Amino acid sequence: MKSSSKASYDYVPVPAFEDNYIWVMADGQSAVVVDPGDAAPVEKWLREHGVKLFAILLTHHHADHVGGVASLLRTFSHADPIPVYGPAAESIPVVTHPLEGGDVVKLAPPFGDFKVLDVPGHTRGHIAYVQDVGGDDLPHVFCGDTLFASGCGRLFEGTPVQMLASLDSLAALPDDTQVHCAHEYTLSNIRFALACEPANLDLQAWDVRARGLREQGKPTLPTSIAHEKRVNPFLRADQAAVREHVLASASAQGVALAAAGSAGDRLGVFAAMREWKNTFR
Ligand code: ZN
Ligand code: FE
Image (cartoon, rainbow, N blue to C red; front, side, top):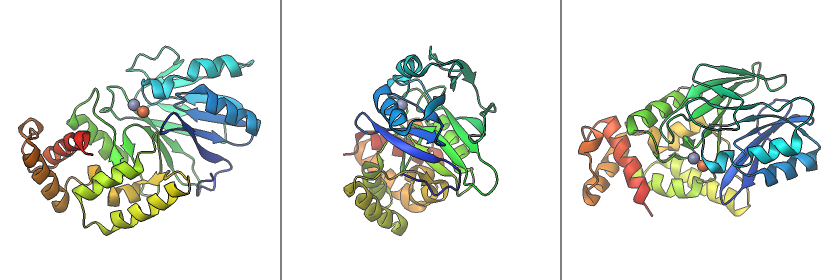
């Protein structure tokens, strides 16, 4: 799948497991692979396209994101060792270049620089990579399990305060930033988003478009920051309609709003919304 970017290479979501995407950036000769939880689909893609594995970027330690690295290194190790970038704050044995927020990964052209953002919440040390392509090309971010299309990651190791700050730092990226998430969760996220904000016309239109894409077997990604600001309830905890529906559901289900701070504020709404999503069917 070609992205709308004018870059001289493609951003391809290689499906893995049930609903993971392993993003492959390839220029026809070499590829940078993000979060290869499974080696087999990546290996197949690289072989089919005759592309050499150049570098691996990891966002967090979960097995569905790192499980394929060792096998890929064994299969594709050549004269130059393949660098594996990942969060310094998490224990991932295959990482050769540990990173923290503010670091910049400098890869050879055409891949360019990747600015590292600390985005804790889903896991304690989760990072995102903001690709600075320069020129007229669209900016890109690889955000793992932090921001999803119309949703956000579960809080396995972090707090609502951390996750909200992480989402804020992603939302502060330029509006046209292409958002490369690591899972195809869009349709179920939209169902929840509509429960939070039933009258959101952008969301209703997105629901129709996303269903159409999935019926054709196409990914709903990448999304963009501008789009997420319109349709993602986790970026819209300050909206009156979102607050109203989240608080009504929380009180109906006895979700502990007190633990989330004062019930009406943005953080309280966000925390209650994240809790509600965990049990929403
Ligand atoms: Zn994860
Ligand atoms: Fe995951």
